[in-house]
Image 1: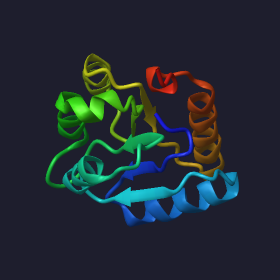
Image 2: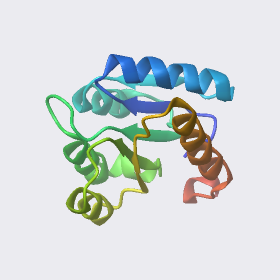
Image 3: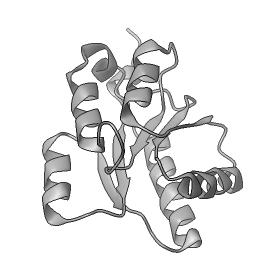
Image 4: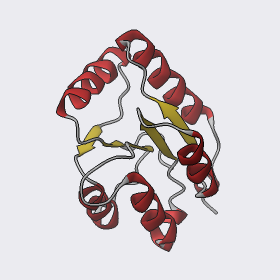
Length: 142
């Protein structure tokens, strides 16, 4: 995990992307925000980039591959797994089964998208602040 790396957001809804862009602008984090509309594009970027992302925030219901399939592909990729990038679900489609399935796949968080913009901003701030203070194995260069 690179605390200064980009925040990867996999979200196919353009309106949600605009709202998140505004929220991160208000929060004034230095991390670059990178959006992908489907999991395949995100996976291709993660496979090819030299950058280590700070966070991956993914919707569940997306075209091509869904968030669960994306998580599984990242988890099975040894090079990506060693980067210790926190993977979080952020979705309106939260139910008991999807939350249990997510945690069974070693997802580091599952958040329901709030409908109010201020609540969404508060949630994003809590997520980023938590992970900025968290220690990962990749923090130790030996």
